[in-house]
Image 1 (cartoon, rainbow, N blue to C red):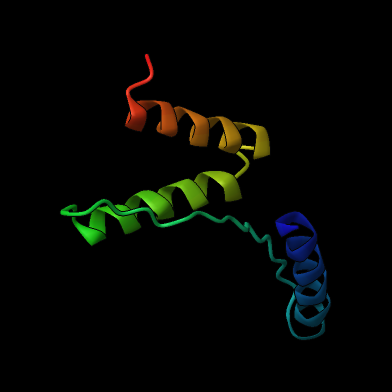
Image 2 (tube, rainbow, N blue to C red; image 1 turned 30 degrees about the horizontal axis):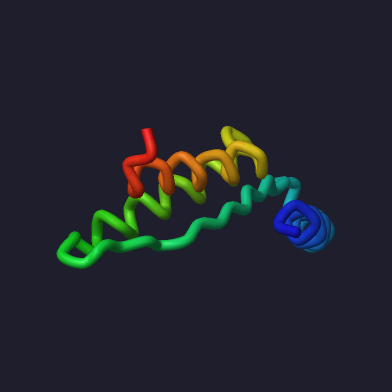
Length: 81
């Protein structure tokens, strides 16, 4: 969904920018969930979520990697190892 949204917005912006300037635009769209634990610092949870969103936006992570990260974090939280 984020890819389709990014492409549609990028195409619209390219058309508008072409009318007023010779510059082009490249958009990166990412997402994440802010997960905080009781007693943890909210700014650290926000920072972590922003870094995850940036990695997804830049293509460093794909959906499969994101899914595996969720499973990995669950395993660590439950100490299932």
